[in-house]
Length: 140
Length: 139
Image (cartoon, rainbow over all chains, first blue to last red):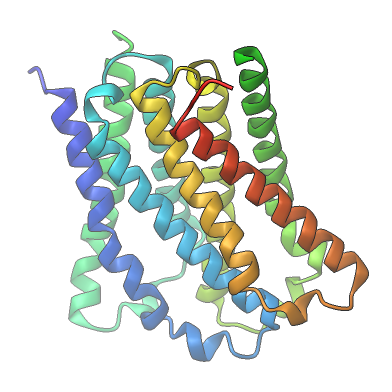
């Protein structure tokens, strides 16, 4: 089976952009405004800055993947590095999900409970897509 | 001149690797471990995970900058777009340093004032450099 790499990268880009919705819900679900209020001002600001920039980076990965799909499959070392690093990024994110987070008590509504596996599938799909494209364009 | 541009971009890549290390040790550097124990567990974990992944994103910026440094002049489509996005990142970070982080955090505290101006200069400088990479012209 010969899967067109360019289309796969575009799909990866769309999967990144699809994360905008769950990411923007995180501060509300975890009630950041209330829970962070006892923290010192600088730490509180850093919390929001981290969150905002992580969201921005994910959107940027999505935009690069969609806008530069043709270039990202051209076999150039930069393209391979980009795909490989994104695959590592999401692999690490998936590992963290199972080793660092205790999300059980937060999955307290049917919507959260049933949408959570799709979030994990999204992470896993991005690992597979970017790893596959990175390896495939190396002629392996 | 192009060789100098390549060297400057490589230095910026190395600087971003240094930022990765600093960012990973921010909690012990500022003595925030105890303070973070006062927030719910998941929130604390989110903070650490964001810290790690932002560091990893900076690492990606560093690697891409290092790989692209030879293409900045005359500029390929991929180098220009990636430079543009990294430029946007550092421009926003520079703006936030003055608009989001309160002046109360550093005004009147000499070492913090120094750090504030140093990082503002670094963020602003990187933003300018990457904008140059996004819209290169012969110097």
